[in-house]
Length: 364
Image (cartoon, rainbow, N blue to C red; front, side, top):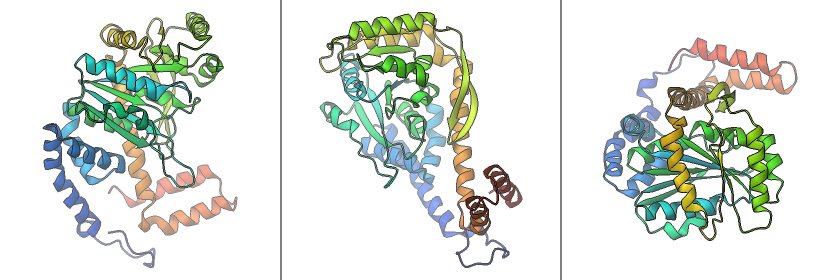
């Protein structure tokens, strides 16, 4: 157990193997097999509990993922991103209806922004999806971004893997919708759909944010509005001029930047939909199927490796952060942070010292 705040820093740490925290973790992990088995048998309440554990990074989640991850990899994971007001939630609901009519089970992960003041989130995306609330072959999970950049929650990929393992055919991940930084979904999804709305200047926003570079499909939603076809034509013209080769850049997981190379299709298809009425949505589902079976961008070894790297880096970064946040390291950590706050130490040297502290502490 980490020591109480008042323990001198030079005292030897007590044996963590006998700590109450480890005992609680062991108790939680012991619940995982029954919970996992129930979720695999179709119990939605157990699935909800597993996803809560994943979002909160509990011992149940880790034990469950060891069992579930080898069963994942069969679902089609679709990321849906775009600026606010482009109709992402409405399109997800419409796409879910079309997929259910085709006999497919659908899991939805809707990421909502968190308040920087309270840390809370409205989780309002699911309000637009109440039509499917009584369908047991549709599971809608709202997740708070909790300050994680990139448009996703930090545990979105793990939640998608759980839904995949329990047998959902199609998994839709809807990003926050900030309009400038939601490109991380490309590393989490087999197919990335970028939404635009007509006459909102979003063509320029797409270029600025690099959204077109991560698009496998581009959808101009609200096609019943004036200017929708013109917006689609402008986007097609931009895509014709854009390079078609693989794009190499950087992506982040828990604040850790790394190079990413994601092969691009020869030319993303531009579709026009009106999600509120369902117009164009069956064509969108057909395009998603065609991308999965034809382009196979998400099935290449490079893409699978990139996705695995993002997941592992996120876990490594989170565990190192938890170690640094422990009470055992509080005196050293607070002293270093105080020096940075007083401009007596630069942040880079501070980071190096904190990492050296972890190295001296040794592996947990």
